[in-house]
Image 1 (cartoon, rainbow, N blue to C red):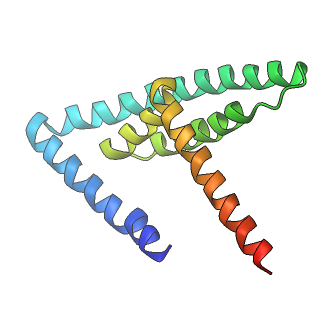
Image 2: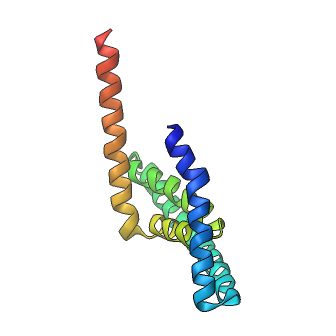
Length: 130
C-alpha cells in the first residue's frame, strides 16, 4: 500500500511535469496551456453530462425496483474522472477521459467488480477459517 501511495504522490507529478515540459518545448508554452485549459473545460462538461445521464439511469432503475449496481459504480468512476480532470497534466487528463467515456469505462467497471468479488471471496474464506 505504501508503494502505491509513493507512486501516486511522488512519481505521477514528476511524470506530469516531464510530459508538460516536453509538450511545451515541442508546441510552445501557450499552446500547452491552451490544451490544458481546453481539456479541463471539455472534461467538466463531459463529466456533468455523463453524471446526469447516470443519475437518470439510477433513478429509472430504482423506480422499477432494480438495484442499479453498474450505474452506482459508473457514478463513482465519473466523479473520480471529474476530480482527475481538474488536475493539470496530460497523463491525468487521459485517465480522466478514459473514466468518462462509456466505451472505456465499461471494462474498468468490470475489472473493479471482479476485484471486489475476489476481495469478498478472500475475506469470506478468512472469516470462515475462524
